[in-house]
Length: 303
Ligand code: R5P
Image 1 (tube, rainbow, N blue to C red):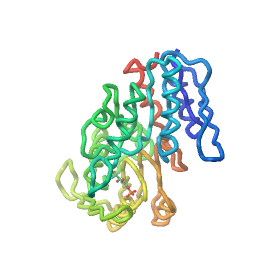
Image 2: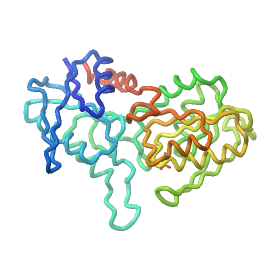
Image 3: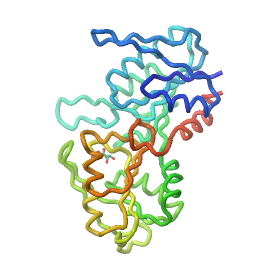
């Protein structure tokens, strides 16, 4: 039987994954020593194939613990280790933007490839590459999307919303959600000047009809993969508000909303702020665990 290993910081989704796969679940115990190191204790009996489920927000300590876990499992005779990381860290720095900068995507990707036989994630930040295997050089590197779960969730709340993508990269997700329902959508343009400094320009022509689309009195939903500082969303909200919509909602895969981003967005009048459980957050409203479970079954990773 497949065994899912989870950690206390992502326990409930990992247990849910085990349930969806009818797999056994055990927790990896972590003990923090006073000097900041971690003692990692695995279950005493391990099958030949294990799945480690841990999301990789706040990644620095987690990566070390993950590598210790995977190496210990291999030392104990485990033959195949799958990493299920609903949020995959260090994918943004895919080139050296300035002289001297390390290309973290490649470095962390190679590290994961050395310890894991399969890696599955949701909406990783792959800007300049097409496939996850270009970042993590293994055959079974699989990037799934939250769009199916988002679409299912949104249709329970709206009948004819307008979707907004805050930048060109978001078009892939917005389109995947909008097209099955024939919901109109608009993709804005974004320029980034720094971590917390972005400009969003909205030109509301409908991608389907190539005609001007009014947002006034419409339910408008901004869709993005990640809300980090929330600045992208804030700027998009400002643009949308100029057209007096009925409501503005936000849906993202990965919720960080650092500092007081959530409060700022609510204070601006955003009605709903929703995210998936890829990162545990107060805005979690729908789950990507079934999406991961389906893929694991399809890849014959879970018995
Ligand atoms: C950018 O390419 C991403 O899709 C997000 O729009 C971006 O990372 C959000 O970051 P922030 O919340 O800091 O504006």
